[in-house]
Image (tube, rainbow, N blue to C red):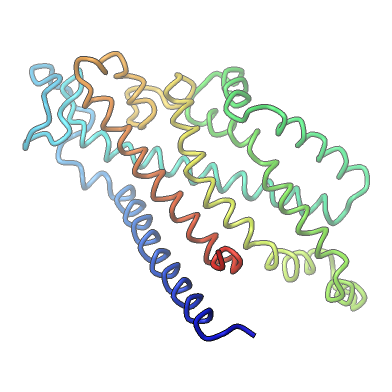
Length: 284
């Protein structure tokens, strides 16, 4: 039995985690809403060039200054949030769904298909993710869509491993054996019994992956294998202006700051969700 002070400390920790969850979830929602309505939030047209006002210093008129073509950097950062954030969310959704489906299939059916797919996943996990993505994106020819495909091709094994291990642990439990003996179909067992029990770890992993995937997408764009100018995307914007870092650093630092803030919010949200879902993490 736990004594009263221990119970009180655990309650305080749980309440703290809830407050953190509300704060970071609210910040993430604000970020997503601003991305959706980015067209209406830009003070200037992000694609209109004004060479007479090129490389203007940050001021009350242009808070983040202007780039080498005289385009307002604040407007480009705001409009670029839609491409950067939603491309990342699409990528995370793709790898979560594909990896989870493969993991459940392997864990439930086993046999030779499990061996083949798991060995394939071992090959992908054996290489550094971004290096492998660079090779795949280079073969596909670059572009934002191909960058998403490249990262999806090398990122699904993590989810497949988690889903497979969770499925294997549930497969021999008494309630699943009872469901099979009662004549439940495989699809009913998977959607009614397996998925609800494994969605927690997968959701936490996907939330923690948002920041990582955003950085890797921006990295591919920075190296010329993602979004192409003049599309406003944070990684591409940094790549397009990296030569001005010594003379006009605000042009490159503006999208870099946007990436930093977004990644930090999603990482903190993922950590907080992990703490909230896993009671053991609150006992530390």
